[in-house]
Length: 249
Ligand code: FPP
Image (cartoon, rainbow, N blue to C red; front, side, top):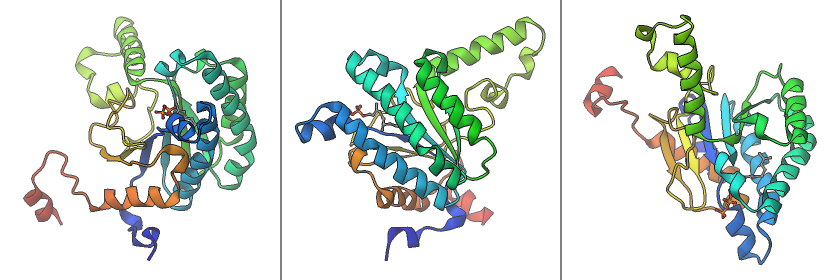
C-alpha cells in the first residue's frame, strides 16, 4: 500500500514549512558545482508543491533563500537569483492550472530587481487562486522579521495607535510577515541536519519537527507523504497531559 493511501485527510496539517537543505552536497557527490544541486532542487519544489495542492493543504512555506545566504560566493548567489527568475517564470502557468496562489515573505527590497519583478508578476497573476498558498521565504530570516515587527509595533505605540496593555501574542503575530497565515503545524528539514537556521522561530512554537536524511534534490512526493504520516502518528498536547486529551475525545 502506498504511504499516501495511509494518510487520514482530516488529520493533515493546514500548513507545512520546509527547510530545503542539501543541494550543495548532492552536487558535490556527483562531482559538480553546487549550482547543479540548486537546479536539481527545482524538481523537488515542483513535487512537494503538487503533492500539497493535490492533498488540499492550505499553506506550504519553502525556505528558498535566507538572509545569511547573501554571504555565499557571488557566483552561487547570482546563479540562485537567475534560477528563481527562470523558475518563477516557467512555473506560473502550472501554478495557475493547479489553482495555487504564490506569496512571499522576507526582505524583498534586497532582491535584484529582476527577481522582484518576476515575483510580483506571478503573485499578481495567481492572487485570485483559491487552492494551496505557496509561500517563498526569500532573503528571509526570523530574527530580521521579528526585529522589523518590533520596530513597526513600537512605532504604533509611539503614535498612540496601539496601547501597551493590548499587546499579546496574537497582536504581535499581526506585525510579522506571516500575518493572516496560520502557524505551521509541521516543519520538515532535509539532508540530515538538525537545526532551525533562523526560520519561522516565532511561528513554530508548537510545530512538530521532522528531519529527513534525504538531500533536497532527491526529495519526492513519497518522502513528503512519509513526513505527513509521521506527523499524524504524533500526539500534539499543547502543554496538556495525555489524559486530558483522552478525556476530550
Ligand atoms: C540549501 O542547500 C538550499 C538553498 C539555499 C536554496 C534552495 C533553492 C532551490 C531548491 C532552488 C529554487 C527554489 C525555488 C523555490 C524556485 P545548500 O546549498 O545549503 O546545501 P548544502 O547544505 O549541501 O551545502
